[in-house]
Length: 332
Image 1 (tube, rainbow, N blue to C red):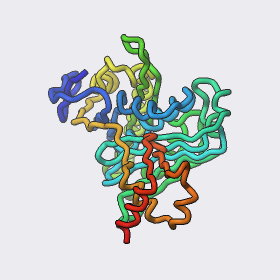
Image 2 (image 1 turned 30 degrees about the vertical axis):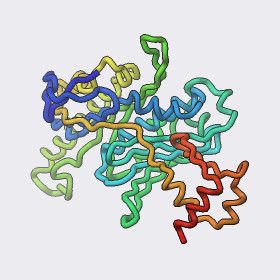
Image 3 (image 1 turned 135 degrees about the vertical axis):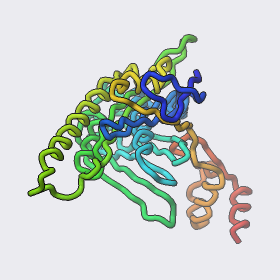
Image 4 (image 1 turned 180 degrees about the horizontal axis):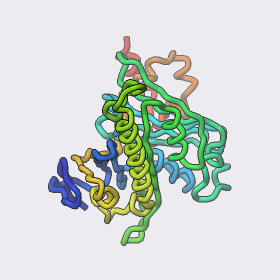
């Protein structure tokens, strides 16, 4: 399904630039509340990520949510590289990773054990991951410092764990809601979908400095109180988006934003496309093998060959003796 979005589309005004409704990040801004936000809608991209592995439903749902969460958070950053969300814990799921590049390429994977099969379809974060942490990482390449923020897993859902991170950050006030579900198509097949909506508070004008002893203190205090009330209302409006609305392919993302914030004077901007794309390649694998001593290479062989499988996309590369000889000959 294709509809459109135009930069600065106003309340109730349907957008005009044709783009797909699925696999997008749709930015918006509500100036009276001094906030910006984004809606993430994932269809084929997240279904492809999950279909590359035979994940149990408990794992698949959580990974779909993590991918949508990564796309939403990445949209709030200015970076040229890779934004990664990673969960490590001591529960049935010991590792889960989702990342999104600045070009909109998504991928993700999970590592788990047999304990997940005893869990309900939608287990809480403590039951799925146990005790652990959620890490936010921005990697912009070898010549830049890598940023990483880490927070304990504190909450029943991934959104609640993310809010815990927001609460600890003095520079980042935001609210987020995430959803994922396996949906039935008209032909009886089932596909995974995911979505998210996020609002982020902008720094208020004139927030710096103290007003103690100044005549303008009372008006400024009133303005601060109004801003706080506006922020609370914006979070309530965002939270009213239902799980069904966040993943519904028949509800255009711009229409959801319009429904939530029309009365507040929302501006809807040009969307960004997302797609599943793994960064693995035979050349990358060859580079890893070249870095290993030949005696270690020999110990890795199975039936005379080396097999390397990408954890993200499950693509397998294999190297026989002739391929290995050519690989090391090129290095000499």
